[in-house]
Amino acid sequence: MAYLDDFCNNTLQFMQQNVVYVILPHDTTGIVEVVVEPRVPAATISNIAVGVVGGVVAGGVYKMRRRAATDTNGLNVYFCPYSNNSTKPLMLGNGALWMFTATMDGCTFGVGSQGPGSNGNVRVCHANNASQARPDIVFGGDTGRAAQGRMQAMFARSHVGPDGMLIEPASYMGDDFGQKATTFGTHAHGAAWGFRALTYRQAGNVFTHGGIVDYPVP
Picture (cartoon, one colour):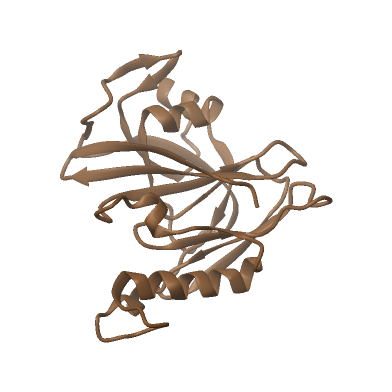
């Protein structure tokens, strides 16, 4: 299957030209082997034509799941778990060159500092405090999404440290908070990790690719 080989062998280019969303169980953690397959029912991307760009298939909507014995190829990745109203950490190292986490639509992802001597090791976390978004709850003078984001940032920094980097909702959800994100990281063996978010919108079976947001290495 050309699309699976392209995902495994040209992962970043594949993400730039297709929408990929995650369906792994939220409690998945550590190194796993993943694949992608076309969404069912079939979906289209409004702003990317179906075809081949630079030798890689484009214009498709794919779901990411764990590799099965019958799959012809797979990609080893770290997977950072997710839990509603909780913060889940994971230590990344050199066991895999890619990392993914559950689909983000209001969560915060934290990345620890990667100074000299880190050698490809960094602590990350996926923070969710959706219950804080209730309008009757006030946190730090904020309510709603602002209060949720403030609390998530606090919990994320408690795991990754004050000098870490946060991928926060305002950076990937768009002005109307209507976008979702597939957050991922990559690195060369022994080198610092870089992180990105593939953003997209969904209206039924029609998706819109929102581009990939690049985040600075902390």
